[in-house]
Image (tube, rainbow over all chains, first blue to last red; front, side, top):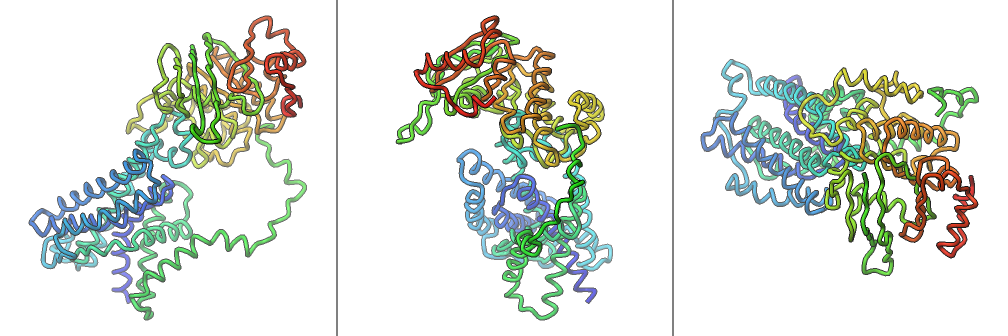
Length: 306
Length: 264
């Protein structure tokens, strides 16, 4: 049982990187970006093929990052320059990436058994694969959380947040909203591809199908994280995302352990996300009568006379 | 400070809904001019402001701000020259960001954004002082999300943001129309203070004739995409609502009996 939980935590940490990427588009930019389905596989494919041809696993992961950023750039250009709706732009890139990923790997899947990975460092120190993944995953996640916390506090980071929040206002304040959307998509897909690269190395293979449904997993993790662990401020949000991704993996592991067929997993995930997204609607049904407004509450707006 | 030359703007060209929203508009604002712009619904007031701000591309003509030809410049590039407050209080601020963050965004208008911190401690002190001048108690709530503020508070904040970095041109697009009368008065007074203190060149659209007469040193009236009246100085000081209605009737050949205009 402990092994199952540890395995889930290790996977959760790697998927957390992807979840943070999804959060950047879904929450900060307010765009549902389907590119991730392709870019997570692309990260896996680039890393796997590079390692297969003898590139060091760290450089391979870096190449995956660049590949993902390129995918984000393509979606960004389709959306902002060619004025294709964001959802459709993401789908176009995703479909195109399917072929690109097959080109990269040369076949539908690539094994990394007995090859050096980013986890080898800790494995050579005597840790098991799962424990090395946990250590490496934690290092990556911590680094990414710190970098993003800094970045979204900078002038450019603030401009991206304003763009997602109120594009009209952003333009009136001299922000080039198109550039900011492209930048956000680049960062997001770069992270997603890194996640793909880390996942492929942890499971020792890359598969052209592995991205299917990943956007839903990302959204599930975002929502679970926000609901269970809060979103008081940006740092709290980032930590919630990581915990959300881990929680999602633990839930899946337990459900599988309880005997649910693995083939039903995507259906289960889709239903979970649907329920989570519909939660506000259910809440309204359950609480039809709001608390009556008390008389003495009316003078509460006391901040000045406006 | 602002020169508009022979500007035309057509909407829905080539369809049954085609409308000539601006028809050969030309005028010049001198530095420090505070112009109130009135006219009925569909006269083209907001269209004119949006064309100056770069929200819409114009079909013909040219626009200069502070001697710079901005006709072909995109909206965000012009933003360095222009401060804007919109009719909808939700439009001028980012609701999910804090008061100080919104001010910091406005403080960097027209400046290249870099990877340095989005807001400095020194700025915070400065913002606190400025918020005090609004007299709304916002100075103690720097970190509060703007979404929590009332419409009037948000408009006052937007006004502060529009003037934080002295703009070459201030565009107020019926910025008090969505507020209750008392709040509208207060925001209007604040606007007047800011404009006088900063000697700001301003174009203010209003539906309220009384306001149009009371504020500013110059009054323009639009009808059917054209400027039909442009008075200033003493002539403007002396004009009354009745005069305006009469002048409107003469020029347009119609009764200017819009409820919203008369209701004040």
